[in-house]
Amino acid sequence: MTANARERVAEAIEQMPLVDHHVHGMLADPLAEADLLDAMVQASHVEDRAAVFDSQFGFAVRRWCAPALGLEPFADAAEYLAARSELGFDEATSRLLRASGITTYLIDGGHAPERLVPDERMMRLADARSHPIVRLETLAEGAMSGASSGADFLDRLEGALTAASERAVGYKTVAAYRTGLALEPARPTAAEVGGAADAWFAAGDPRLTDATVIRHLAWWALEQGSVLQVHVGFGDGDLRLDRADPFLLQPFLAATQHAGGRVVLLHCYPFVREAGMLAHLYPHVHLDAGLALGQVGANADVVLRETLDLTPFSKLLFSTDAWGAPERVLVGAAAWRNAATDVLADYVDRHGWPADEAIRIAELMAWRNAEALYGRHFVTP
Ligand SMILES: [Zn+2]
Image 1 (cartoon, rainbow, N blue to C red):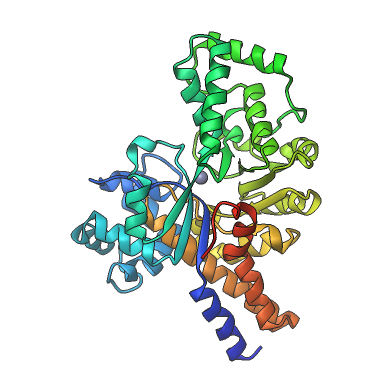
Image 2 (cartoon, rainbow, N blue to C red; image 1 turned 90 degrees about the vertical axis):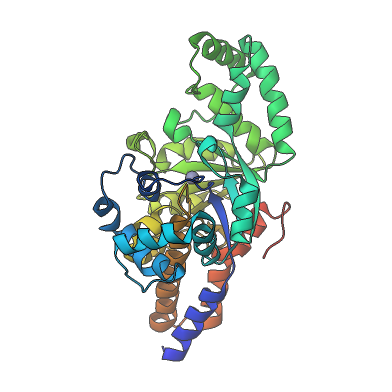
């Protein structure tokens, strides 16, 4: 390909607005360095700066976030953290978020909300807009916390789901963390749900780990005609990785394909190809490789290329899955732009794809597919 065609693809992707269809809130100030370092990676209790900065993610921060803070690219960790605290929380957060070019965020507020800035403040700093994704397990745990019996829990849950449906643009399940993805396929009967609610109430556990209740929630979301985001693959340390393989979800996906809703497999790393097969096979299955793209940094092109193996291009979405640290938002966006440019320019260069078509596919991933999926709720960009 001529340098011109590659430049055209690169420039178009650089300018493209992004819809981050799966992200979380940012840690509130005052922000301790240890908390920031923890939030940058999936581990907790990170001991030292080198553990974060001498990694793919750390090099990505130095490459893309340092310039956003007014430093040279690849400024070292000490310079970076000093500049960050000198700028102050609002200014540093705002610069990092705005440099991402993300115009719309769909925020899952279900993880540690008490530690995060309110969405409205984050959006002021980002100069962007947001819509809520409701995490079903968190909603159910809220309903159980005030319940006086299993039956009372189900009443409260119904009220909470109705209220959520008035504001949510979609739902999320962390079944992978709780029961694993090997969900029984059939919709549970009312008697089964009642029995499971009684058993959960009797156990007195504040955490929802009952597979029948989780399956009930997942079916509810899909029968609403909504989008159900499903955590797949890589996550935090409390995830059982052997239960997070998307192939475990295949019977559930087969059973729900005509339920009315759509499923998005989130993250998917390292099961990106497996997830692509499922998106290929089932009409209601979509996916993203958020989280992984930012964390693998300079190797993001490999991951993105694999998502493009079998996934229909109309079913691939962009997300950062950032939680806590705005660096993850910017790195997620920059890693995606960089990888999408490398991969799509290569298709133009070596496989003769028209540059306009490569740009069109990038735009599908950047925001058009998200708009088509969630779009009755918002218009972008
Ligand atoms: Zn997430």
